[in-house]
Length: 135
Image (cartoon, rainbow, N blue to C red):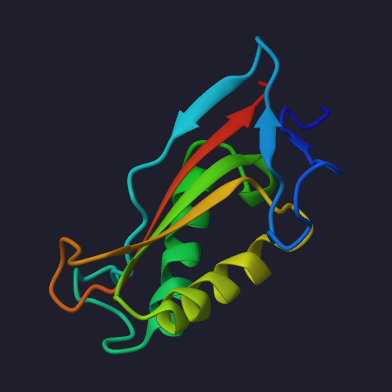
């Protein structure tokens, strides 16, 4: 079955952004709204304490598990919002690079935000995502 997500790029906007500027899904697509993917191990402990990159990788891993539970995969994601608990742009970029690489050529529209604090002890990264699939 063909994928439901169509990424839209613009030749009128900067090509510096490492993601598509928009995405669409047809009316018959089922939308999947994921809870924020956190860097939590199965036992509830925080993975990669102190490491933006390790936590970003764990967030991606957990997001892929949640997607699979909804009969979807990373290429079904239509948009993301990446939250990084830091005021340093370099920390945001470090987390972003891990997430960007995990998505590969499926460079969905994304927003990268620095925030003051996240919900779990020692948490530095969280990924919010929406996916679209055709059943």
